[in-house]
Length: 175
Picture (tube, rainbow, N blue to C red):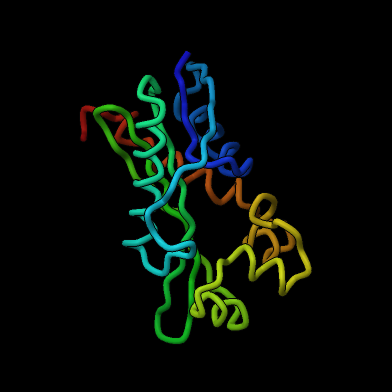
């Protein structure tokens, strides 16, 4: 059995991590522990660079807390403005003692009303809750679920990025 650490207590991130690992390693069994660790970046990262750094920091910090773990997963949501449009996405970083892999979710455009508040330094989940009358949506359907009326939720958005981050572990001879 492999020990998997998820650098978050968010049940959505834990589920997405486990789903991705089970798909890439279907014959392996995993024990999961979750831990809250610092990202070392702002609460709402506003660039690819800051977002991937947050995911990387989370994964590495969690592995330091559990040095016997086989894998540690950091997932960080971020946003990026291009012209007048703002897009949101998440980076996933998986680390082991000797390897690291990265994957990114699909990105999607945020409504102007939401984007303007992110630029003021507010966090996406809090903004979505306020505008759409939700409570703790980031631990449920997330912005993607709210905006697609549940066609895609955060777990479905994050799982392929976890799988992508695991490619270097699956195809070690290529990396």
